[in-house]
Figure 1 (tube, helix red, strand yellow):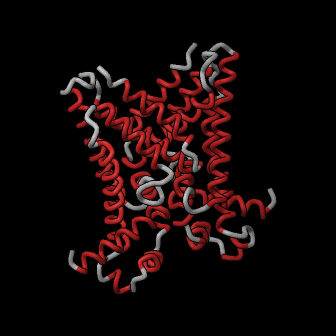
Figure 2 (cartoon, one colour):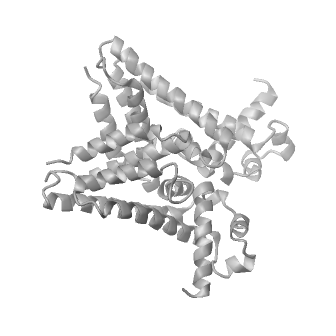
Figure 3 (tube, rainbow over the protein chains, first blue to last red):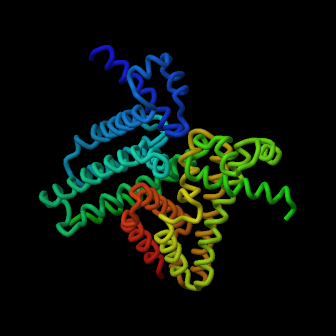
Length: 196
Length: 196
């Protein structure tokens, strides 16, 4: 990796934590300078604006979480077991998340919905991709006879994501994983109901 | 209401919208001065700090939403119908909320979970109260024979709140109420399952 690319990546990684903890409006360029230890020239030489950093930091954070989830699920063969593994992943990692501050989709969604249209569009793209990935898993499960043929893959995906995010919000607010339990129970039931 | 109290209330109401839209870290005292049109002395003469304003603004926003929900539910007699009315209230108001910016509990929870312990504690108090209120409704419903005696009132309340908040997050991100539908369906099912 060339030196300039390394610096960009370093800034993105440091900024990802700040944005995930404090939000877009709550993170200043001064915060980024302080966290990276770089000069103004060092940061502005690599990025045009705080928004450009935020977009790349968001992508970085989402990819990191996604990779961690995949590490867990790719070794699992059965469709329903794969989905259950996602629930257990979050149960384990909500209070000890891959990127400090919790779920970057949730944090950025709440942060951007009223105040930053570019960032909001990017969160929607990522959520659309996530929904498609879950729906594809369901469709493959149908072909393999592991999911009932009349299951609504898209509705399931949205319920799965919404229920998960609701549980993440509660557990992170209380800093107590037990507040995720009632939601995990609901998720496992949604998964069980996919059975043929 | 004495003049000083009127000014405090005016500041709180204007600030509630700012905090709900932009978060605690994203709202500066300058924003509050601008929105109220008051001088520094006019604001600081009434409040010690931004945090003091934020706490009162949060309480004001929660009370306003709560009053709007109660207006809808108090005329309904049956326990399950009361709960369904809460779902329909949100379906109607997610994109046109009583306080601009959406659900103050959700916004403040995500905002404060990593960055402001006083505000986080206050959100927890409010969520505890909300959970108790739902659980009480369920217990009364049991006495009236409208809810099955073995229903877990506290678990239901947490699932209800978590599912609702997940749906609010999705619909507000997409600015499309259809993204609430899958979650509303799940809420109505949770309510139906309370039947004796």
